[in-house]
Length: 386
Ligand SMILES: C[S@@+](CC[C@H](N)C(=O)[O-])C[C@H]1O[C@@H](n2cnc3c(N)ncnc32)[C@H](O)[C@@H]1O
Image (tube, rainbow, N blue to C red; front, side):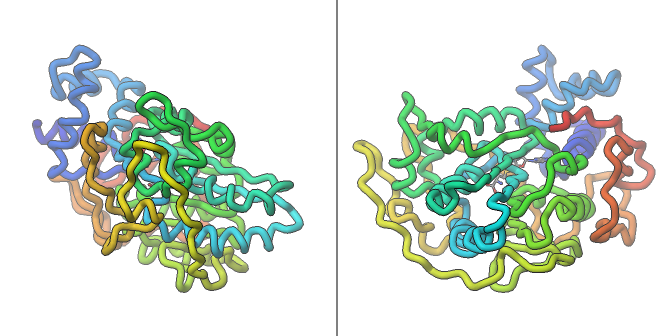
């Protein structure tokens, strides 16, 4: 691919989603965008780029952006964050919201639904205490395709073998031909909405718990800081934020501080307290019931624990006959490292800091500042509001 064409596409994707593509990901761009080009009867990426250069087609640009997202997701990813949710955050919420009897949870990069459904499964364990409560789980993502899959709640054998304790499979899923469908009760607990994290968040309302896991890692420092700053405005004073295992707020945003002793969990800096307060307990998991006939999960999953020596983030090998593995993930940078610079682009502006906590979020509809000096402002993304 010509460097100019790569730069054009990488800029388009970054401006619309925040995802940073470096030149070494040119192969990924080609492999993911060739099907988009072919679907439109184009010969290749050169034609795709020249079409867009001649006239910006927002539908096509959205398709390109969506094709470049990494949608890797699995149930109870990393396990520990969900243990903390069950053992600390949820009990604290029950106490703190005893009068109001309601709370709201936001899954800000819900992908195909495994994360919000994992949360819903934990909430089910508290069904009797929450009987008269109003609890909302909002799952948002930029990818329409992933949201459709999440709403359908249909997963392959491979997907239900990634992190889902077998007792939950037995309890909440039904076999539908080659797939497993999560039950309608759990599906009804999650509302899905298309939402771009670069957009104004006010219309989403205020949340008590936010899961924003494994998405900021694909953004540059400035974008991460902006997203976190706006997210903080949508959270109650005592709310907690969950980030992915390789993500942090440190050195990126002063809107949040780590919750002592709870890795991956953050509280608002200006908050009065934290739903993450208090030590976690190592409560024993319930014993797993027998698996449905013909279904064999790896031992560590039958026991509801990660593989020895892993955090639970590493999926088991794909069983024979299972669908193809998910698309290769973009290699995220280690947290805290400087953002990669697209080849040929000017160096980053010195001293560009994330928006300070408490400062107003960008106005909806206001033009996004150019990410680097000298580059003309991109056309305004045509991103649907929730
Ligand atoms: C790797 S998945 C994370 C799934 C889940 N949170 C987890 O940790 O397992 C990242 C998701 O972020 C979404 N995403 C990427 N950029 C986004 C943006 N600007 N706004 C909203 N979602 C975005 C992608 O579509 C993808 O589904």
